[in-house]
Image (cartoon, rainbow, N blue to C red; front, side, top):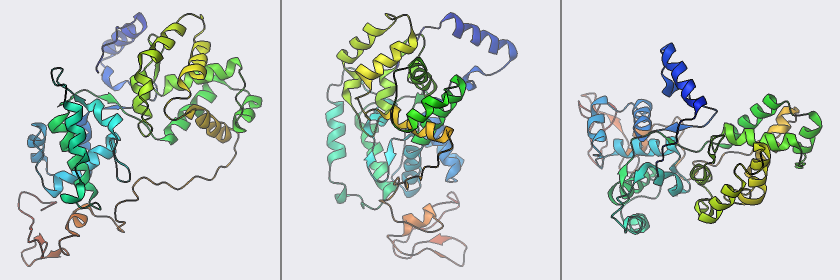
Length: 341
């Protein structure tokens, strides 16, 4: 759902100031929240994977042919926007935000789910991450709704959350005594703790001073543990009851987190993040756990995405004409596809 928030006096003043200086206000993003459009992610990945520019015309018209180049391009877009993970597959809580269903279509969710639930082994090699990402995207494109052109909020990784918390610790000058408590996993109900939580939610883009908590963003942020309670009327009613009733925004945020939001999604994620940030602020060295982002795909040294897509049909070789080809499946590079088949 796309909503337009009314501009407050402070926001309007900032916009006027930027226009007078000749700056592009769209580049002046508040806090550390990440927003990106599907189109921007597509353009990014075309550059990363060296996809010829002429292909953008067909992609811009929502034409995504069933070819290796397009499949790996869409996998890249999915990784870029966090709606795809090679290990766990489609991240529906994120993907859904990039499509707008037809209000008259009551079956879009069912049809999309049926498409996704079809046995991928019948049509796609389970080790072919590009193919699986492509097939999942096609299900949403065909059955869920229209692609939304706007830049939307998308979740960050935990390292950026820790950085946001570190920033707030420095901005608010949190006392060392409290940092030691946080580092030990204890979070005393102190004014500094309350305002630190408010700063963290602001910096990560899920709380706004004028409108309060953005439950849609919180739901998206916790996409690996999607929790529909974020979007329930009961949750919104509890937040509305606290909104402006206390005269102290730090206390409002703290109570909303303690009594309403903390147990939803990734339960008490903020406390884990604040603990990690406090340890870093104190100079405590913590051994990082190894990443498990893309363990399902074959590991290839000096990874070459073109080579991977030919792996199942035979080894690539350079013909006397200088064209790359797969001897088994007889696919050749063309003069129009410098980087792929």
